[in-house]
Image (cartoon, rainbow, N blue to C red; front, side):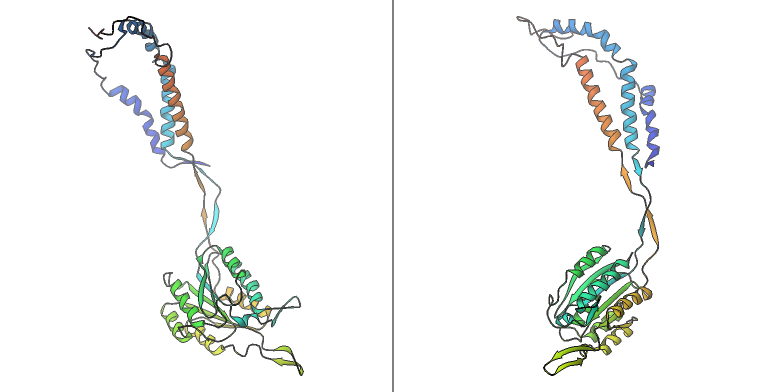
Length: 351
């Protein structure tokens, strides 16, 4: 629908009438002091045009000027086209994902549709679905190995976060595991956000073997800053491997430090969750949706398009046409009498 931002500007529509009605007339010039050549020719031309000039103030010119003025008044009222309401999700949590991409994440102890896949491949799939469900949250991505890096800063663009997660490769940040550095980096990125909405979901399959900050120190810092940490331990507890003596059963998650992960979660008000297979990891992210529900409230927004440029442009075009018509009518473009030969250029106007 159409709307006006400043409808009271239409009160200016009567301004020209008020000026014409109450303003005193401009004083007439008594004499002229311009010395011009071919004066007699111009006097004759002016006498011919005098009647036309008087008629130039006819109602046609007057109404044309009124239309221009009303177009300017309409433009000053700022007409807008207001579109249909669009629902925008309200801001929910500031949620950071920290994903382990160390060398051990290449272990193929998970399966999808009967095919063995690496731990990171399953994380990409299930975490991507989790990201897509977090409507209204600002999300960011931290990847860590020997070092921790911000892959994606906090953003409402969940598609970008998911894309950056799927483009992450094992070993990109080194082969070791710096859990403490990942938590410290998350604290740094979330400290400016509102208290109570700061959440970190940390996923790993091992223990802290690198970095400058220990998990205990990072956990204490997170607790001071009001950052809730949900830790996820991934990896199967049984796996059949081939050896020289035949097939044997091993525990591929023997390096997983569950005690540290559990302490980090409990000390910050979060929860430790364990995922031993593909379905278990999907269930973990569903549980996170229950523990930290995404925002469901929406705000209505109506897109607005400014339309003042159209009456303003039309008024400008009409003004140019009116100016050209008046110049032509007064003989400044056509019909100007050129001075004859041997005309005395010393004729003085008004004398």
